[in-house]
Image 1 (cartoon, rainbow, N blue to C red):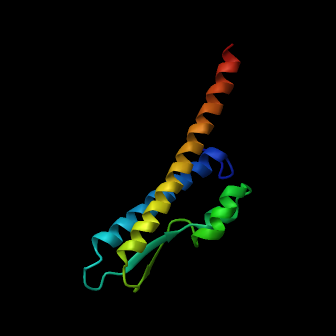
Image 2: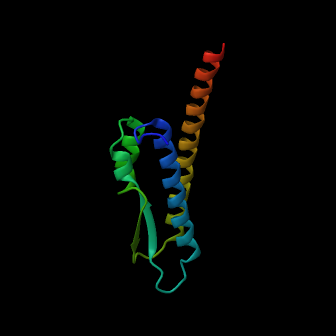
Length: 116
């Protein structure tokens, strides 16, 4: 596959992490009334901390702590907080998906220039 510092690989990894966070948020909402359920969270500061991209670095400072590290806690699940986190996650997904689209477009342009 691609080296870890490759922009496409970093974007693919970000999409994977965002998907894992969304699964954790959905699980929290689905199990908020389940006795002894432990709230799950996925944070990826460690993944983003090594980035040279300023947007990713800013996101790293706001997000949390490691690549696909599912943390559990005994915190009471607040549906409003979980939904707000879900919306943030959707925005992150949108940014990552647009980045991937941009990378693919750049690759197509390079390939087309080589064919012309």
